[in-house]
Image (cartoon, rainbow, N blue to C red):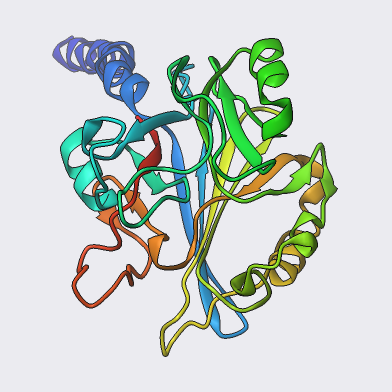
Length: 272
């Protein structure tokens, strides 16, 4: 009788644990953005792929977000490591190209639906934008007014140009005369698939161990994935290239000899 009772009590305890355990784990899991990180080698360079799932297992949505250095437009530049240490995002990277003397980002600048700069200071260049859901778009400055209105764009970043649009590789970079586009360099490229999952490709370079890549190299790295990608866009690279996950820098932060935590930059893309 005692043996039967003991087995019954053990069975009830196990059943209770199965019921209580998911309830205890649910809040922590719900609050966590799902991020997968891997590093790879390509020729004589190392690169990193960070995948940010649009939804985690319990349905938490993690849209792309924008922030300015030092928490405000025109407040100078700041390292990505510094920003991540203060705001505690799951993922943070540098984004726009910027004026190194003032720390102000170039191009049209919009955050959370409000303009900080309504016109481009770089001519008819390509912008990156995101709508309220975090879906990414790219468009040229001359079409910005139409695109911002029709797609309800809430945030913009001024990088370089798209490499993939609706699953097709684009060679817009061939029309640029900037020298480092055709040479090996550190790069940061953001991509998004048709399910709003975001991929950040970060390439080391300008060191003895890593030379960096060209955009032709990038094509060869992802050529079998292109048809699955809705959009890929080139962000600021070179010494500004910074990838920080949970407060920890994952790539080689080169900057200058005085910038031990990477180059100070004007704005960020981040995910909570």
